[in-house]
Image (cartoon, rainbow, N blue to C red; front, side, top):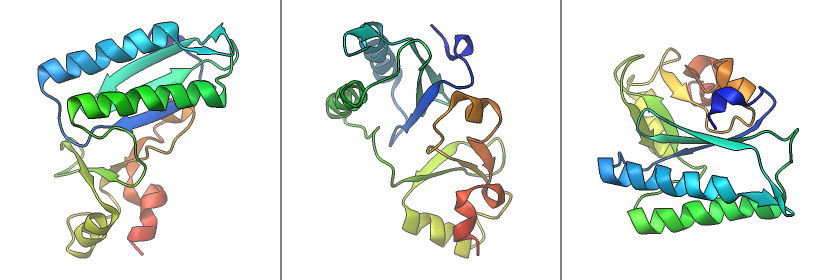
Length: 163
């Protein structure tokens, strides 16, 4: 199933890789996630879930809560599987501390930096209120579709670094 088959109300998680993946690593990650999602359940009930891979760096996973809402245990199972894949692929996927932005304009590659590095990029003018940033904290597929995932720093929580 693709994200296009899920409603705007679907619960969404966005994970970014700490580095670009090699072609074989990307294929392995997506194959493993597909396998996990096929058997993903909450209290014995299958979850209507889908994933998407964007820009070679972001794994998006969504669940239609109208069918079966994910439980805390099922969400933990997803995170646990992703942590296993982190270890197997030597890449970080799960973590909320990094800041993501497009380097070099609206079509630039996604860049992952620490919050300190982001502050430094603001201070030296490499990041402005027009810089495209990614908000990995969005929780609904409708937010993604409405453009609240990829937006200017001045329109996001990132603006606190610009003040």
